[in-house]
Image 1 (tube, helix red, strand yellow):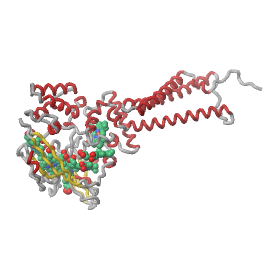
Image 2 (image 1 turned 90 degrees about the horizontal axis):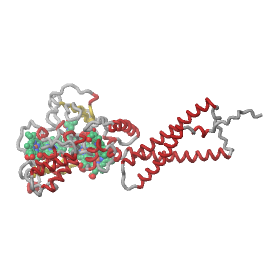
Image 3 (image 1 turned 45 degrees about the vertical axis):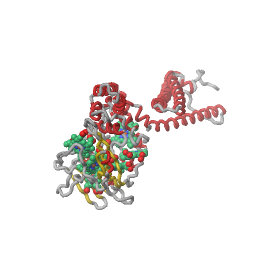
Image 4 (image 1 turned 120 degrees about the horizontal axis):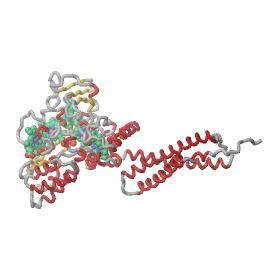
Length: 493
Ligand code: HEC
Ligand code: HEC
Ligand code: HEC
Ligand code: HEC
Ligand code: HEC
Ligand code: HEC
């Protein structure tokens, strides 16, 4: 006989009938709708807007997850409530011989597969999106503006930020997202350092980033580079120096090992200890020749103790090429370049000095700087029509290289290739790094060790090439050999 209670027990779907689950469902449906709409927008639009990306691949999925979570929490809560009043719903029984069960099962299968597909597309795009240059460079635009702007003018403008900053593989992806989470917090709550400090403490080693594209064993040989300067005189005289840089190579199977890329010799390891956070002071260097098993240590006279082993760094590409993507040009270099391109009128008396000076005056934001530059130069050349074209050129230099909101300018980002404005190569090649017995030193006094000067001066002088290398005719005159170039040259006026 049927002695079941007359009260009808609630169906499973009824568990959803509570305000928490309904809210969750609402959120889920609207986020799915938003995702599909934004996804179409992002795929079809010809422009790419980082905010559409953030909404599609980060915000919408977060809302979907919150929606599903709320739905489940609501159901559990409702189940609890019902169990206390009318008793729990019967245990789940699926019987595929029943047509109704088959229909329901089929429905869930289709919806489930659709949802999985959407999740797959979504997470694939989320992964790519969070690795994209838009996301890294444009989303937090004030913070990343210096790096992004300089990157766009660099030889790597078509290389994604993530190729150098994260590289391949899952573990660095996860690491970068963990530190990224902190960076998002720092950006939202305005807790980030200005300027963003350099060097980056835990940058991925060059073998796993740079060397994925640049074949380290490649033999480069000699590179011919001309540096053109304008001196700070009324007539802005030109001084150019044409160098043959002995870049050389690092792998005997591809060419002679030697020259500047000798440091990357496959058979050697060079390690160093820097006594400051910006790695500008290097009192200790060790070379290990792995084929011969010879170890040589060089140190400056005032550094006699052994460095802390944890602070020793293995030299890689980034110890010289530390600004491959983000050069904040020094005002002297930027003005020299604009003058050689005739963007700045070279016939204006003292324009080299004045333009450089206009750039380095203290400004608190971009608008103030652009106005300040115009007023300053107008004041120096009143009623001179030649200044009309020059002012925008100087303002453009400011926009590309100075970021007052981030306190970012050339002075806070040393460039380690070369030795004129920064110690660079002379951090080790300064004549002070010797072995303890004083018998060997890191090459320094020979100006022809790394390059030869094939021509210098201006006009016809530049056509008299000298294969042996000329003696450097310093435009600033003779100076005491105890000085390093960057004791006088700072990049500014
Ligand atoms: C060719 C490789 C490369 C690319 C591409 C690249 N960077 Fe860098 N980035 C570097 C190197 C190298 C450093 C300096 C590392 C060091 O000295 O420790 C650096 C430094 C930085 C720093 C630290 C502050 C500073 O200026 O030193 C930030 C922030 C940064 N990059 C952001 C970006 C962003 C955003 C992008 C994409 C728009 C990007 N980078 C693209 C190589 C790259
Ligand atoms: C995704 C590939 C890729 C990665 C990763 C990469 N580069 Fe490059 N690099 C390039 C390309 C492409 C060029 C431009 C070559 C050209 O135009 O001749 C270039 C050019 C250069 C140049 C010559 C620049 C000049 O002034 O002509 C240097 C130096 C350099 N890269 C160093 C680095 C360093 C250091 C890293 C690691 C921080 C790095 N690259 C990472 C692709 C890459
Ligand atoms: C000791 C410093 C030093 C180290 C370490 C170093 N380089 Fe260089 N590299 C130079 C100098 C100097 C030049 C000459 C160009 C210049 O002055 O910008 C150069 C030139 C280059 C060029 C330009 C070649 C061309 O044809 O234009 C590339 C690419 C390059 N290096 C990649 C690398 C890579 C990749 C590594 C790491 C495996 C590396 N370098 C390590 C100093 C260094
Ligand atoms: C961290 C220290 C350090 C820095 C920075 C450094 N070097 Fe060196 N370099 C060395 C050491 C050590 C040697 C080998 C000295 C020896 O044992 O003969 C060397 C050797 C050389 C050689 C001679 C290679 C040969 O054929 O014997 C050249 C050329 C050279 N460096 C160029 C440069 C240039 C250019 C730069 C800057 C872009 C630079 N170095 C930066 C430490 C450094
Ligand atoms: C350890 C290697 C090394 C030694 C030693 C060296 N140089 Fe250089 N020098 C370089 C490199 C590398 C550059 C190229 C920098 C660049 O690409 O921006 C350079 C650039 C220069 C320039 C052009 C700078 C500019 O901006 O116009 C001059 C001039 C110069 N060196 C003179 C000298 C003189 C003089 C000596 C001897 C006292 C000397 N160098 C010794 C590596 C060296
Ligand atoms: C005692 C200070 C001092 C030292 C040290 C010094 N210079 Fe200069 N240098 C000057 C002065 C002053 C000028 C003239 C600047 C002008 O007229 O604009 C100058 C001009 C130059 C110029 C042309 C103009 C410019 O600003 O680029 C170059 C290139 C140069 N020096 C390279 C070097 C190199 C390379 C070294 C190291 C090997 C060096 N200088 C060491 C003071 C110095």
